[in-house]
Image 1 (cartoon, rainbow, N blue to C red):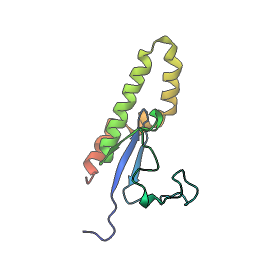
Image 2 (tube, rainbow, N blue to C red):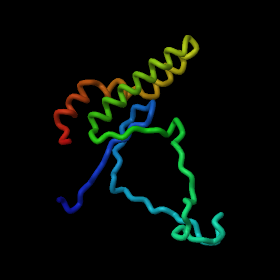
Image 3 (spheres, helix red, strand yellow):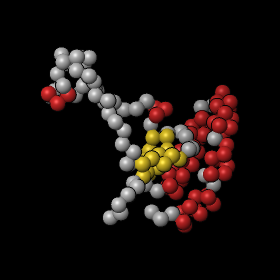
Length: 128
């Protein structure tokens, strides 16, 4: 086992084309509430049997998918973008501006970064 192992995955947000590399080792400090400033009557988090916070799904614009290989993430980003464009087109004639805006906003990814040749080249050189 390596001394400084770097674990990562690739994140693609829903209806987006950007592929982001995220480290598993990127720990963030959790800020615990100060005693006396909570709604728990001054009890610390260790003494509580019920969690302080509620959990729910992320909002639609913050949902993402995680992949272990960059090439797979690029393929799925392209597939998701094409599905999103098809859904915009299916909305009818009034969605033309939305389609143009989406293609304009994601021009570089759709026409350069996510081309089949770029994905295939990455697949051949990808170690994972």
